[in-house]
Structure formats: structure tokens, C-alpha cells
Image (cartoon, rainbow, N blue to C red):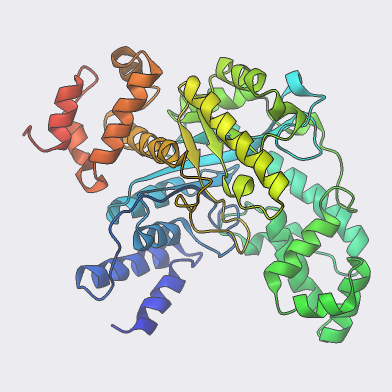
Length: 451
């Protein structure tokens, strides 16, 4: 098969039809088995926080596509996270298993913390509002489907309200949520970035002349006409400008969030725990008032059942301004140390929900070398939790884990070792063990010693 065939199949991995995605992966795997495609051996890089096209990916990646790209690139562990839905979980874990890729999947949302209602946390300019995650879902078939549906409904309601306000400003370029926005999504979970795609397309429909369209955007976005003309051939750039000028603070579509529009921490964590996943605190950069009180914030989260920490490291070290970089790198080291002191696994990634973001963090960067081993260990723990929960009901927060590894240091060491040792293609060996198994029995099983 030719390079063109490979490229065509890789494009098909992002088709909205899951049958086409699966068929394309079948052919790509066959090409790899035949030696026509070389897949890198797992290295030391990880990305545990890639959004898929179920909530927006800057490159349009489906869960299957990201699994393929991660395997091609030789990621040691890969993870997907989507806003307010678990639509990617089964597809990603299945594709990763077929590719022998260590993997985990999660969900991200926004919550309201009454305890910090007067302090900004990790949602800039929005006191009391915090991004938060559940990570390591073993399946999307969660016990509380009603709450999962509520998360999606709340997000859709916020998006629809945003559209109403932006429509009033951008008229005659107006979009309909159902007709113009959701077709950009595979399963109706539209985000601000999907809305920006719809506005760009609607403007091209109403103003087919590039000059007229440039004049429209220059006026509405209050941006120099020459810059707009440049952006007409740079869709990601234009969409980012639309979002910045119309939907973020100061824009006509922005309103200060109503706390009632977001779930509370205890309620969300209960949903995650009932689903046998791991409630995960998300950290921005340590500069907000809330994050400067990190001990208080961590204790609040741990009391509510939070058991891991998520970081997007690129925000903390890949910065041009030297003083800002110095501050944020110091904050990064500090929060990692605090997490380690509390036994919280740390998972990291690059989001990829905007064009231009890295495929994976550069652990060889001087600034990340001191914490890279912590990040890799967190990835192995999250993968091991996922595979052990799926196969044997013995995940990181299971009764079995708490009974056999009552201290977090022991539990982290065990799950990290399983994550490094157990390849996905051998995961079925865990079916031999049960909730009374000892560690040596598990090690024997995953090494194929036991029949």
C-alpha cells in the first residue's frame, strides 16, 4: 500500500461514522503488521489530557485517531479527556488495546466551590468556578446516567445562551444551535470552539466576497483589516480571534457565570467514585488567589474524595517572559511537591483543544526534567488503575487496593509497577485473579506464570 493510502486511512480515522473509523484502523493495523508502517517502540513521553472531537480537538482527532497517533509516536501512556461527556471512553480504550497502547480516559467539567466563592481559582476572572476532572473511567456505562446527562445539558444550556448573545452582536451573521453548530460535532456536545467554526462558516455563506467578509470581521472584531485578511486563510487563527473578542471577558457574549449553572464538588466526586474512576483536581499555574492558598485547596479537595492532580505543564514553563516563567516554574515545582507529600498521583498532558498545541510534553526540557519521573509515574498509575478495574474490579480506589495498600505510598508504588509491567495485550490475564488475590499472585498472573 502507498503513502497516499495511509494518509487516506488516517483521514478516515476522524470520520464521524464510527464504523468507518474502525474499518480504517483495521487496515492501518494490518499495514503495520505487514511492515508497511513502522510503529515506534514506547518511549518516555506521555499525554494524559488530549481532548477528542467529542468536545473539540484542534486537529479534529477522534479517540481512535489519537490512539493511533499516540502509538505511532511511541507514547508510553496516552489519555483522553472530554468536557461533560464520556463519549470517547469505550472507543479510545478499545483502540488503544488493539494497538497495545497503555491508556486511560476521563471527563472534565466546571464546578462551583462555595468555600472559595470570593476567590479566583483556575477559571480566570470567575471567582469560585473551578475546572475539575474524573480520570480513569473503566467504562462509559456509569451508574448515575442521570447526572452524566445533566452535565451535558448544563453545558448545552450555557452554550445556547452564549449563542443568543453573540448572535445579537454579529447580526446578520447568526447561527442556530441545532442547524449550524451541532453538525460540527459527532454527538451534539458543542463547545465555544464549535460555535466559532459555525460563525466562520456562516460569515462565508452570507459574505461570499472575501473583501466584504474581511470588512465585516474587521468591524465586528475591532481588528485591523490587513490582519483579518491574513486570518481569512488561517481558520484556527480567525476562530481564536472570534472567541477572544466575542465570548471571553469583555466580549458581548460573555456574562459572569451563575453559580447555580454548575455542579458542586461533593456531588461530582460522588458520581466519579461510583463510576470507579478517580476524582482529579486540575491546577492552572499557581498565580490566582485560590491557587496561592494551595494547601487549603488541596485539603478541601481531599476531604471531598479527590485523589489525583492534573497539570498542563506547557502553561508553566514554555513562556517567553523570563520573570513570568521563573514564577510559574517555581509554582509548578511547589504544587508537585505538595501533591507528592499527600500521595496524589500527578497526570499531565497538552489538551490539544486548540491548533498549535504540542502533541506531548517535552520531558527533556530543562524545566521539566526535575518532575518528569513524577509525571510518568502518574500516567502508569492511571493506566494500571484503568486496566485492573476493567479486568478485575481492583482499581486504585477499590476496596481491594485500600485493604492491601492502606498507605498511598505503597499503593502508588504497586500501581506504577503494574503500569510499567503489564502490556494491554496481556490484560486478560488479570481475569485469573480475584478480590482476595495477593500482590505476588497478580505479578505471576500478568507474567503468564499462572495457568
